[in-house]
Structures are given as structure tokens and as C-alpha cells.
Image (cartoon, rainbow, N blue to C red):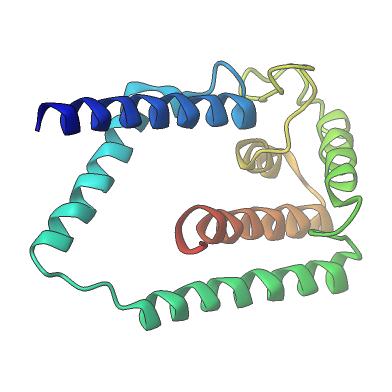
Length: 169
């Protein structure tokens, strides 16, 4: 039992190290994803899953797949809608560059650069295209088309987050 516990502890420490390194690589050194709150939430979810398994609560794979497929369809519909309505690529080669240009242009147009709520990237201090900034820009937009585009961007980001973080494999 002692040998098993030692191996288990080593495996968990290695997994923890790999997990935190992956988060740092993907989100930067000072991300809130490495906070105690996030680790506690992750730990709670893992233990809740273990408890459900032990209690015999089944996971309905068909239902989970149906939910995932529903969100993937919603995401694909938003991609098509934004392409048709705004002639803007949400998910293709060059879409990130296009989104960055639009966000930067709107920040400059509405003079939001000095707003303390504007989020910049950690490394380059460029204006971030995070949902928080899109919501901030909606406060300043006066043109109907820009407002519609930002609304569609935000909706897409919400659905994409659900697919990539919760329902996707």
C-alpha cells in the first residue's frame, strides 16, 4: 500500500506540473486560471464526477453527444450568419487578424484606448479581442451595423466557449 501511495503521489505531482505548464503556455504566466479559485473549482468538479460514479449516477453519452452537437450546430450557424450578414470570417484562415483589425478600429473610432476597462494582451500589450472588450465596445457603438457585428461576435464567443471547454472532447 505504501508503494502504491508513493507512486500515486508522484503521478499526481507530475500531472499537476504538466497541467500548470500547459495553462501557462496557453494563457500566460499571470492568468487567473492558475488562481486558487480556479484550482478549487476544478478539484470540486473532479470529485463531484468521482462521487457520481461511485453512487451509480450514469452519464448518458447519447444525451451528452446531442447537447454537444446542438452547440456545434449553433456555432456553425453563427459562422454562416456572420459571413452572410457582415461578410466577416469568424473561423477560417485570417479570421483572427480580421477580428483584431475591427476591434482596434472600433477602439480608436470611439476613443476607448484610455478606458481603464480595456484589456490588453500580457506579452505585447496589444488590444485584446476578448469578450470583455467586445462588451465594452458595445457601450460606445452608435452605428447599427457595428453593434450587430459585436453582438454576433459575443454570441459566437459564448457558444464557442461552451463547445471547446464543456461539451467537446
